[in-house]
Every structure is written in structure tokens, then in C-alpha cells.
Image (cartoon, rainbow over all chains, first blue to last red; front, side):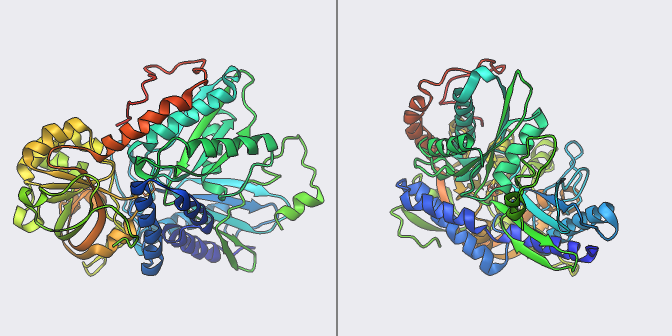
Length: 321
Length: 226
Ligand code: SF4
């Protein structure tokens, strides 16, 4: 049985970690872009950001004053049992979101869309979002929080099989340029692309690709991996850098996740995870211990399975050991 | 201060600044501020301009620098303030209030994210002797937070909430910012957009148009979404 107190205190720690500490994979990727950036203004912006990450860590202060929309991804091992059940878990995540807002502090960002009601704690109607997935042969729970910038850099479009790779590239460029001008998307970004699925899942997959995969990770389908590399390269040759200034630093990495879609369509979504790519993860075991990390390992062979039945291979099992 | 040996011009500006003080600031100059600033965004504009409430305090009390921002801040039980990170919010949404806002606030500097359109600078900033500074990044909230010396006051907190109310803040070496629009209404983003635009046409070469159009879709790549 996983103690609920451990889940709540871990969730509180994760809220602060996500807000304050830039993940190493993103940082390394950004440094890589900075090293080859020749645009003077774009290079200055990235340098300021690198110093901002240091300041945030030293001062234990949120790296960005805009909290974005804090949310939760929960992966539950098939054998995991939660003290108080899933209802208690959801309460713990809502409490942690509210208390971290006060303690870090974070900006209370969440308001009612029409009445603009603000609880000053980032909790409200359908907020924070909690998404679930499951994992075979495991007794732990993994909590991930993501605080993604909330306004710009995402778009959805129904493409068709006839649009092909050209159509994908075109819509990708459209989105990057539209939101890259003036740096509305706060690039350089981790760009996530959702391909296929039903419309809502197309959005979900793209968002998860941006927020839950680390810089340097590749899709296991070699064809998709190749497209990821091509799109990354393409984004960095637009001629646009940080804040939309002339330069080459647009895409820290490009991740694509796919899902089976309607035979007549090829829906696509694009998401940009900004200069404050805030994600933090922990695995909580039945002994109440939490192991923190920055890689949510959200996508697994199990989550990407294509067949009716799931046949674990020794390799599949090892993957999440 | 951002430490790299940038070739960009750098200036430190004492607040309140008069139009005269802003004369030498060219677009693309890095600026750090010392003195008093205040936050105001849609909630404040609506109340002050649309509802006709005017300013909640005198220029002497709140200064003449308007930051498009809501800070990550909390008020402790004893009434003191805990201000962490400060980051600007996108400014283009506030165009419609600006003309009247300049009149009632006397602001000479607007700080925000992403700038405004060139017409807004020409029609609203230039006649009022005001410039626009953009934050850098834009997520340099922790660096900017270091420049905050003191929260002086808040206004309309009860009505507008923590995120939308006016925060009056004393700052020191507060930055970096970049001059996005100068006293003539030149725009750094416009200049950079034009440079980038030269390359964009080529990127699309050979990519056939989408099978199903979007209503109102255009192929004019010089357009912007703001
Ligand atoms: S997009 Fe990201 S870096 Fe930019 S203001 Fe929002 S949270 Fe901050």
C-alpha cells in the first residue's frame, strides 16, 4: 500500500522542482544551440536565460514568473495500491498544487474562462488536469508535473493522407513561424508533434511528446525518428532564433508521437514546450520512498503497443526496471 | 546583469524617466532600470479606462513605468509580501486601452512581452513621448525577481485579485530589457521580422498546399498573428 502522505509530500516537492530547476536534458540541448548561434540578439537572449536558470536555483525562485498551467501525469503500476484509493490521490494532487502556489510562490494563473473567478491557488474547475496511464508488473506510482506555458505555440489541423509528408512539413513551418515571430512561443522549444489518433488524442499525443520526452530521445519507429531529425533541422534553418530575432535557435528537439486515426484523415498537432520547460517526476514505492528524476519515461513499449494482446518480451520488461 | 561580453549597447536608466531621458535609447539597446515601476494589465485597464475609475494613486506614488506583468507573489498572513519570480505577459492584447491609458497615467515606459504593432507605436506611443521595453527570453523571471527591492503597495487587490491588481515595486538594476520601440516609433521586432522574412519563402518551396483549406487562410508569410 502506498501511503497517501508520501504521495502528497512528493507532489509538493515536484511542484517546486518543476518550477525552479530546468531539466538537464533541456539545458544541454539549449547550450548546444547557443554554441552555434551567430545572431547577436538571439545569443544575448539565450545567455540571459542560462543565467536565469542559475538565479532560480540559487534563490529557490520560480524560473519564470508565469506559472503556465500546472498539471499532473500519473502512471500507476498494475499491482499498486493507494491508501485511500484514487480519490485520495486526486485530493493529494489538488492540495499539493494549491500549497505549492502559496509556498514557492507560483503565480495563481487559473481562472474560470467566463467569470474569471480566481481561487489564487491554481485549482478550480477541471484544474489541474490529471492524466493517467498504467504499467504492467509494477507496484509503484509515478507522478509527473508539467507547468507548460499556456497561451501560444500550439495548433491543430486535420490533414489528409494525400497531404503526405509535405503537408506535415508545411503545417509544422506554419505553426513555428506564426508563434516564433516576436518569440511568442518563448523558443528555443522542445517541439512535440501529434500525428493521428482521434482529434483530442492527436492534441494529447503531441502535448505529451513535447512535455514528457527528454531532449535526445527518439521514437522507436525508425521512419518517425528520421522525420523527427528532419523537422528539427528544418526548424533551425527558418532563420529565426530566440524571441524571433534573426538566428538559428528555434528547436531544441522535435518529438513525434503517433496513433491510429480515421482511414480518411491524418490529423496533426504541434506544441512548443518553452524556454521554461518545466517538468519533474518521481517514482513512489509502497515503502513511501520517492526517487526523483526529470525523465517521466511516459512512453513505453507497453503504451505504444499496436496489437490486441500485450506480450511482454524480456526486453520490454527490462525497459522500465 | 547578464555577464556575456555582448556587443549590444547597454544603458542604465533612473526612474521616473522623462521623455528627454529616453532620447538616446535606440532599438536593440539593453536596458536596466532603477526606481519605481508598477504592474497593470487588462483588469486595471478595464477599470481605470473603461469604467472610468481613473488612477488609484498619483504618478508620484506609483511612478510612470507600466509593466505588463503579474508577479508570482503571495501575501503572508502578517500582511508582508513574498515576491518570487516576475515575468511579462503578451502586450498586443492591450492595444485598445492604450490611448486613454497614456492620458490618465502619464506613463513614459511600457514594459511587456512581444511588443505591439508598428501602428500602435506611431499612433499612441510617439505622440505621448513613450517607449516600449521588451523583457528578454521571455522567461527571465528569476533574474528580474532579483532586481525587486521592495513591494511598496498594491491597489485594487480585493476586486482584481493577486494576478490582475496593481503592484507598486521599487527596483534596482532591474533587467535586462531590450528597447523594442524608440521615441520615433521604430520597432526592433519589425526590423528582425523583415530580416527573417527574406528566408521564409524558400522554406516552403516545393511543398504543395494543403488539400483542405482553412477558412480565411492566407499564404502571405509576412503576416503576423498579433
Ligand atoms: S511560454 Fe514559458 S518561458 Fe514564456 S512566459 Fe510562458 S512559461 Fe514563461
